[in-house]
Length: 231
Length: 100
Image (cartoon, rainbow over all chains, first blue to last red; front, side):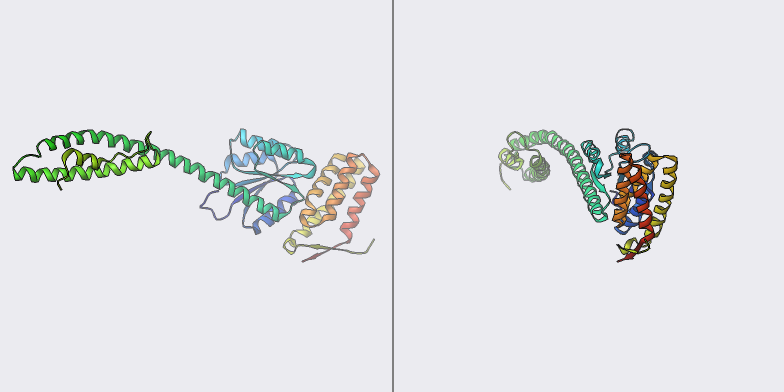
């Protein structure tokens, strides 16, 4: 359901004027916006032009396309996945079963009980919303995984020259010149700051996607080992 | 046949019921014509429709008669069909809807 909307929009497809009038009146009381068409053909025509509908309430027994044929065309020709609840007579239970096997969302028997219908609509809309949330989450997770992989690759690329610099600094650590020692300390501080940032990026990646060992490489310890801990 | 039948209906449906009953009276006329022209399929569809709508409006008797009309056509029982159509006519004449 479009979250910006205040009321879910229900499209009623039924060739019986009495049922259309009843559903417009009753579902409006339950805070739905109700649109109606009087045939399966009109429903397909409407859905091609109008994308606002949140749920279809489809009668099974209609002149022209019956409910099941209309449902199949909605899925296979219009490629719409929006939820559909079938309205069936008791004698059409076999068709209702066929509808459910074809991924129909739910069905309700006529004569209609408006309270049961309201609950069914709510349940179907909530199920669709939950499914969408899961899909959105999986999509975000995949995007994040891509970003983390990029960060990890970048981290490795930067670490290699840093380690070379750390080794070089360790070699000149023995100098007696105070100016050199001062500059050396500044360089070490800056390098450790960069390494700290890299560790955070690497740790974030490992938390979500641990490597074979699952261990986080501690670059701070590595740097201290290489250049000595003289701070 | 002049006794009134009190029918209790949800007050929320008050504005819909008069038109619904008026349309059923029209159905009676259409079905009576259907009997003379032997258009039983049209009568069956009307019966089927009433079966689904009557009780949805809280008028259970209309659903029952609609079901019987549909069945009579399926059984090709014309006498019963005539009887059911007359029963619907009487019901519509006698029904006194009380909204609660």
